[in-house]
Length: 102
Image (cartoon, rainbow, N blue to C red):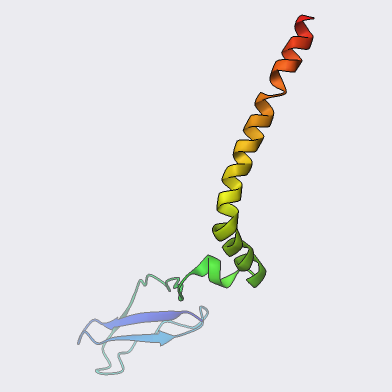
């Protein structure tokens, strides 16, 4: 149920009331019985609590362990793997161009 904010036109009393959307508007101030005006509210905000929403709430423990392994040991081997693949790509290129000219 939404929370509506009311302000008294006579005394300025400001208060909130939880009501159904189908309920009638309040008309009398609880303090002075004066007339009320319902204020336009901004609604509820979205609040994320915790140290990290994505990495701590949705990732599995196995994923975190694998990521830690990649950071410690995989970083150096990943760089050497990249160098190996580049050298392999360079070596086969000349024989294929040699076959085309023959």
